[in-house]
Image (cartoon, rainbow over the protein chains, first blue to last red):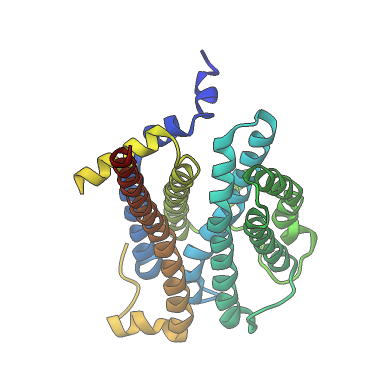
Length: 250
Length: 68
């Protein structure tokens, strides 16, 4: 009984139908959180005593970087589940996670670069944190390329799952880079085990944005996975019926 | 909680950091909107293509019925 949900995950149809009612809730919640946090962080949070107003970039830079990393976990774990239990759905999730992760990594690199100019006086530095994030970006691009490099769906899925798992090596390097190589990038601002080095007046809008980004990520990953399900199941009866009913309604 | 700036102009300028801050937010929101819109458009295109194929299959079926 306890494992029933896990076996159901093997069914793309069950997943598709189950997640349909979630979408409007996720959309409303994520947009509300992101808009609130953006206004809060831009206009109402106090300016930083050292960096002035440029620090306001933190409210998008840190959440984007968080999700770039969390998205990699999701992608690699999905790949592992697909390889071990030979299920179709996890591979669809894995494939959908790659472009989203690539774009979020891109956002964290670009906003970091823009933030670096007024703060460090340079757009780019081969600092350990920045370099390991750039490697993460290339790993995501590699996943996208590998998905398209094979004629056979199964081969593409297995090969990219292996790449995702091998790329996991980079994740602890990114986390620890600010401690191992004390170069330019500042250490973590939010800590779960000890006191954060940020005032609550700045922390709350940041946490709001982080939660908003997580919900938004869930929404976008779901939307992409659902399209992928339709594409791969396009010859099945349930997809045909689904198309016919949407056609009649339109 | 209070508005941190003297005026709207002051808010936009952000003491000289305005271009950096606003460019970052603009790029981020452009990417977020793209992430949201792209699967919706892909689904629309998929449904459109499937409907076309269904119609084609129906036309083929009725054509073969006529020749039989």
